Amino acid sequence: MDVFSLRPPDVTRRDFLKIASASLALLGLNQVLSPQVVKALEASLGKIAVIWLEGQDCAGCTESFLNSLEPLATSILLDSISLRYHETLMAASGYQAEEARVKTIEEGGYLLVIEGSIPLADDGLYCTIGGKTFKDIVRETASRAAAIIPVGACASFGGIPRSGPTDAVGYLFRGTQRHDYFDDVTGGKPVINLPTCPVHPERLVAVIVHYLTFGTVPPLDKFHRPLAFYSSNQHENCERHGNFNAGRFMVDWGDPRQRDWCLYLKGCRGPMAYQDCWKRLWNNRTSYCIKANTPCVGCSEPEFYESFSPIYERQFDVELPVVGRVEIDKVMATVAGATAVGIGADMLINRIKERKKGEAVQHEEEKES
Ligand code: SF4
Image 1 (tube, rainbow, N blue to C red):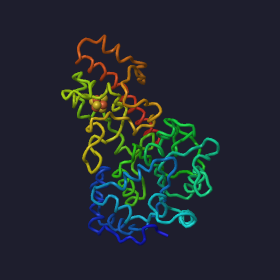
Image 2: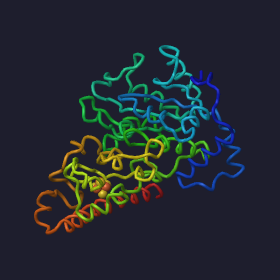
Image 3: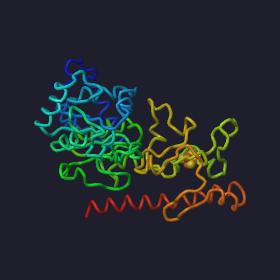
Image 4: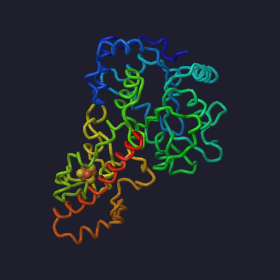
């Protein structure tokens, strides 16, 4: 049973192609809608089955996805796919709901979206649905999926629950560490991580449209994130970067003169964060964390939340890869002049970025060889 089968479609052919074209453009593929591709896309309308599982989550990714105001970004999913199972959205419950999941598994070839982390401690008993632990549900559902899309920081890397007592992991990663817990059911299937807390609806729509169009997934980095969305550095592209270089750091939230100053001393993790929030923005391209005067918490990264906490607090000293431990107060005290402070810190941050880029390139080379 398709849980949305009674819902009249909102998307016309024209809407559908418009959204598909916009989604592919997000991936840098705006020239691909040839007549053949359009035909293939239209043929897929309403056919690709999707199972959306929720484990240790707050349903924030579901909300983010549904709150999308971008013309019909939600509708393209609800009308162009066959959403067979989604605990928060489906009208069915109990046995009827589980039946929809099991029947879809029997058919095989569906997309599996996972929201929330997967607890492994104590045999996974912390998250049990319909008498089954979530880890077993994930294992069973992944076994016959065509592709697996963990959405949000929790399903990608363990997220906030990773700091708790349940040994919460993402589908492939426990923080930065790759685990092999689901390798036997994953096989060679593509796994596309879409972290941030919550998932950005456009990134999810674009990945699904790419799959509908080509039957493949876009190029990924070593943490299985699409390069199109997770290869640019927040700090490098930040609208406050000029203030960082000039040594204008926000220290007093109440001082109107400091309103647009750099948030690094307020705990900003922008230098460690690779995403395109700075240009994609959120809530129908209205704003995003830094624009709203909130430090970036680095929720696109596998280190979030455990290794980045406490968030929103000034880091008196930080562990920088390659450079080592740096005491911010000492840097500020010994480097003469605020501008020099900015430049000194930027040099350190550039070293991090170089290393991260190097790792991504290495990963791509490994995949090609
Ligand atoms: Fe922007 Fe944060 Fe970098 Fe400051 S530290 S320039 S607020 S990303």
